[in-house]
Length: 538
Image 1 (cartoon, rainbow, N blue to C red):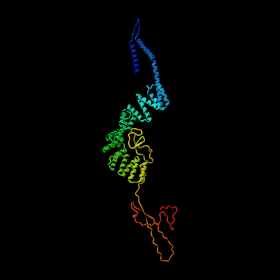
Image 2 (cartoon, helix red, strand yellow; image 1 turned 135 degrees about the vertical axis):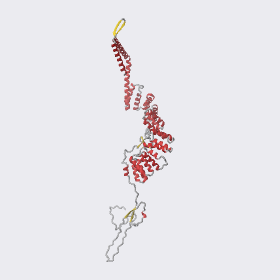
Image 3 (tube, helix red, strand yellow; image 1 turned 60 degrees about the vertical axis):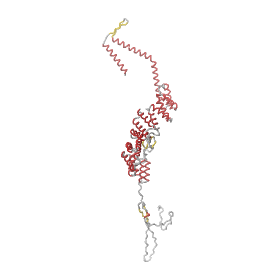
Image 4 (cartoon, one colour; image 1 turned 120 degrees about the horizontal axis):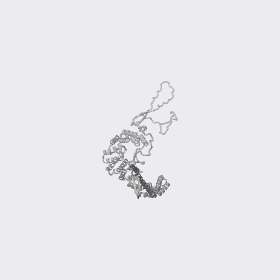
């Protein structure tokens, strides 16, 4: 742009000069060696301009001829460099695709066209080709050479780190990551590996310092950095809760400022206050977290804050939690448990059923089984609710990378990832329940409660006696002998309330005319034959 403006200014100046001379005509006389030369001013100016142009042209031609060898060398050097970079690009693409033959071919071509000092990526291509071909020792030596060069130090450490992890040398890999993070904390891979290692070793202060460096270097976002710092502070507080409760409480409260819904931090701070018998401040820590995200561990610590409380006191504290977060499964479950301990079975059953309507879980049906056991002792219904618990979805737990833990941990025991544990249902359960486990259907299908049994006492009536007829005094009449049989005695059922004994009632005993229970006895001649198809029960 500047050249164009300069050219335009020169042209305008020349045009203005010639126009100025054209408006002011004159003659120019030159006497040189006795000869007089006369010409106008315009002609003289034109001659001068032509001479200047001729001199410039001659200078350009001479300069071009003089510098042509260097220009030719630059041309061929640039062409060679372009060919080398093209071969380097093709080789890196081939190495990334796993084409060892093409990668090695392009490596040789690149080394012939470019100098290693001129382009450090030649070392990377050579090392990648060795890795593809399985020459790991050669590749490691080349990465070590790159790590000694200040220009390629980070690239060499990265290669050594990946190769060490591939071979299972985790200590060496961690050392490479530490070196890279010390020299360049802005490298995400080095900072992440170093952070995980420090967390695994319990070096919480060093981990927090490295996290602050990452935040200052804008490697991670502010929100993520604050969450991870809160997790590190919570882990630090958990380790010194027994030895230094006050310091642990301060770290936990700082963590809660960074992440308000961090349940483990709230639990640690509340436990620290409870060690000082400060129930009020413990409640002020737990209640905001409960409002934000109800958690069963918070409910357990809140309800059983004091060991000397009665069951009624614990029930009142559970109802306090329910008032803070109504119509919540955790609130209802906490009240149901406390009501069961207080032997208020109607309230416990109502709260448990309300919780099951929101989300049927294994623990809710087990609680209903406990309520049934404590209230009625009906084993049929107890077994029914336990069977429903087996088919219900599992309760949430602390889960990270497929591992279920009873308590929260700052890092995953599998991958070492920070803040890996989540409160959710464990993996491995069915996508949906086997049956329709709505509480209405479950209650409708439950067996009826056993009513108090009514004892039935059977009293057999005595056989009726008939008076024999007196013979008439009239003329004797031939009378055939008649064998009179007593009417069949039918048992009369009499219901008696529970607790009455039948032996207290006086009744006529029926004589026993049979033999032993296993003796069929002698068949009477006058007895009617029973049908063959009749099943005799008595």
